[in-house]
Image (cartoon, rainbow, N blue to C red):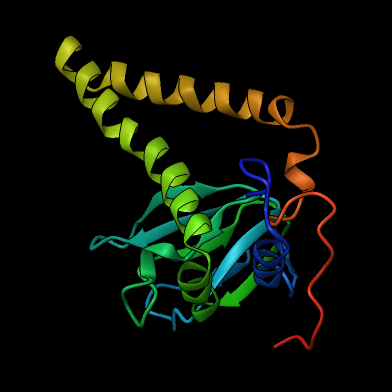
Amino acid sequence: MGHYVTLSASEAQTLAALEQQERSFKRGTVIRREQDDARDLFIVRKGWLYSSVLLGNGSRQIMRLHFPGDLLGVSSLAFGDSADSIIAVTDVSICPFDRELLAALFRDHPRLSALVFLVSYSTAALGPFVFGAVHDATGGFTAPFAVLLAVAIVQLALVPRLRPGRLTEPVSGPGTPPPSGPAR
C-alpha cells in the first residue's frame, strides 16, 4: 500500500500486523481445502499459489492464480467455511492473519479501505467487459482467451520492472519496521 500513498505511522503499523507471522510451504502443499474453517486470510510474501474448486465430475477448476502481495481468502469472507482450496504452485511464504484484523483495518483506517477496494476492483472490473467485447467482435471464444493469455504474459513480464523490489517488500511498504508485541 505504501506504493500508492504515503502511510501514516498508524496505517503502516496496522498493515505490518497483517504480516506478523510468516509460514513457508513446499510446492504442491494444500494450504486450505474447500469447506475448511475460513477464519484466516493470507498475504503472499513469496511464490505462486492457485485457488480451485472441486467440480461435480471430480475434476478441479482453477479459479485464480495468486502472486506476491496478493490477499488470499477474500472469497470466503462472507462464509464460515472456505469457498475454495488454496494450493502452492511453487515453494511459498505466506502470512496468515485472522479476518478480524482486516475488519479492524477497514474500521480504523477508512483511507486504506478505500485504497484496497479502488486498486482491486478497478483492475478486476475491466476483465469481463473486455472479454465480452472481444467475444462480441469475433463471435467466438478463441480470441478472448488469446487476449487474456497475452495480458497475463505482459503482466508477468512487466511486474518486476515496474517496481524494483516490489516482489520482496511487505504490504506495509519498504522500510516499515515489524510490529511489536506477541505473535498470535
